[in-house]
Amino acid sequence: VTNQSEFSKVIEGQRPIALTWEGYEDLILGKIIFREKERVGTLNFNLPSKDGNCIGTYVLSKVKGTWSIYCEKKDLNASGFLKLNSDDGSISGNGKDNKGKKIKFKIGSTN
Image (cartoon, rainbow, N blue to C red; front, side, top):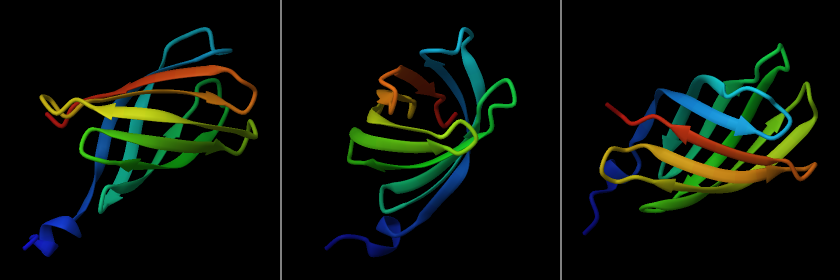
């Protein structure tokens, strides 16, 4: 029997994010705000140079998952894969935007 209350628990908070996005010269540093329930979550972060906000979703299995974001001001969407480091809770990911530009990121651990 699965503990249903643990499965349906909502997890939310903020974590640091570092990302490289082809076309942006500098490393993008910021905070990611997330809300997760049943391994499906939403996220929200800002781009540098007043390029606006990005919102998205992710789905995480035990250690791997997918992500998708949309950045309204730049009219960009991007998606890819992510992987959970079960030792420290950090997440790394990669993917591409709709113009074929590569994206890599690391989200800080829970500690």
